[in-house]
Image 1 (tube, rainbow, N blue to C red):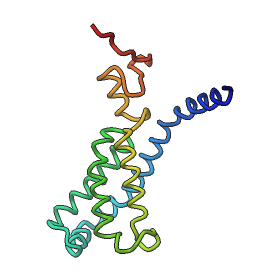
Image 2 (image 1 turned 45 degrees about the horizontal axis):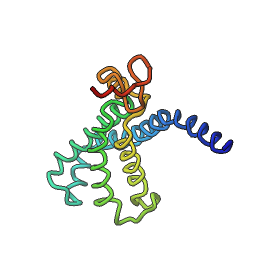
Image 3 (image 1 turned 180 degrees about the vertical axis):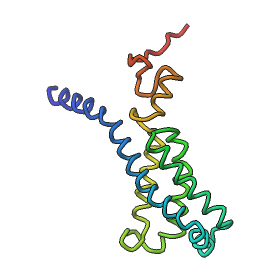
Image 4 (image 1 turned 90 degrees about the horizontal axis):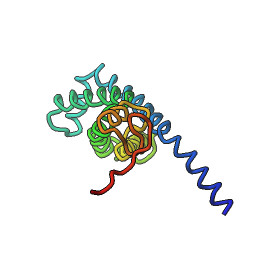
Length: 166
């Protein structure tokens, strides 16, 4: 019984790190997308030409679209704003990057394989599933608008109780 209580208290303590881990994941992804977005914007014509060479339709439009989504993603991920929404187009970009550019090179990042885009895809999916966490604007908006959030807190940082059935 003592072991079970110790285990439960450890799990409760670890749960408090969820917000920090989601923040760190957002910041790592934002840093990674910052590099690719600035590279694309610095040579957008080259990116459009590369897109055309690998068979991506409307290469100029898609080059601007991808660069814009990545740049917007950097801002929104850092702020923790609309996190679940921005992860969807970013995941699509990663899937397209894996299938069109990286897959033929194998898994390893050293060979320009799909290792790093896969890690990004998995982190984006985790953010899609869990949201931005407590350290982000999404959390503040949810507390303000809904009076509560999935963590059970409210605008006054009190526990949320289910309304009683009438």
